[in-house]
Length: 175
Image (cartoon, rainbow, N blue to C red; front, side, top):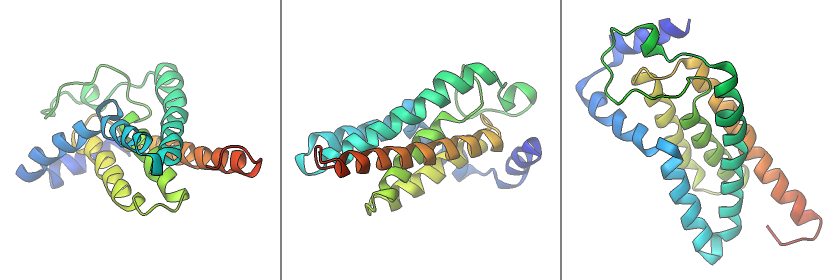
């Protein structure tokens, strides 16, 4: 099923605009770059510092299971190694496929913003979906990698907000 979805995208959705757009979109998620910049900006501004801590916590909570545990444990080969006939539009990622770290980081931040009821969740959510789809379009992840990454990210965002709320409820620093 995973390969069928990827091949459908390659055979029916690939186009000149996407071939130029999706490498740029995916680059925003390289090493969580766009999300780390957002976290840094939120941390710098006194008014959003607590939100910055939540976003940073969500990124840490997703990175540990995604990149430090599951990728090396599962060791899933990327789709382009299974079907080398596909012309890649980006450099071949060197790490394993499962789960998608780009997707996990993206959904961690978007869901943390969502669960905090921050309006910023809408553009973050749109970007998260675009980054997730870019991984499929670019043939570097399977749909199940992206789905697992999204679920890990959503859970990490939720846990970061729940943890902040628990700290606030205990009377510690108002989060």
